[in-house]
Image (tube, rainbow, N blue to C red; front, side, top):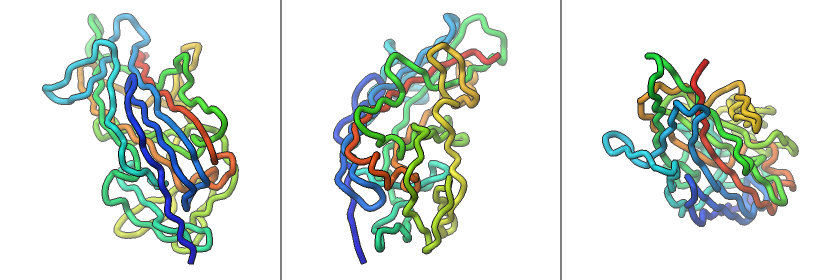
Length: 274
């Protein structure tokens, strides 16, 4: 039996909304990944009448930041490849057997992936009752995904929930190369599948992730087909942000994923619906 342990160290988190730098050695579900960072997240609106506020605290303690900049928590624990279909239950492979990931366990805490919570509120003066705001990822001067010399983010996922509603999971690249080494119970998963955990059983399910372009405003201001959420005016939303390495992604065994440097620059953009 071959056993390879994996290490992906979070080094720091600070910037407009977050700066998270991760490094790793070679580990079981992936080839060697050197560095990736979540570099920037901000909030702005597509109308002068609309204000998209962002803050660090919820409830009665909510205070919008004047510059729409929030620092996320520091990531200090090792991150490891995981798999999820709902952002609620994550499973990981503690070891490989002859190069295959066959046994999986649910994570006991959040130490194997990145998770933090920030708060958003849309405000607008003079808008009709019932006006709603559609929320997208912004396409700023800095690309949401910026690779330097590799394709690490082809195997990563960005996930979000808004007030605990249905999760939005986003693939950060259209690249799909290589083949998965994931075999729960000795049975290889199919293309476009991830792992789900329920009643003590791990099963392969269709990957719910959507393409980045579908949830993003283009440089020309055109919204994608699938907004992250539809917000009610003046309602506070807890936004849970997840960043993790999807162990079932076919790029996890691609040499292109190795020795990579990349940056994820996250920004929210609000549009008055209709």
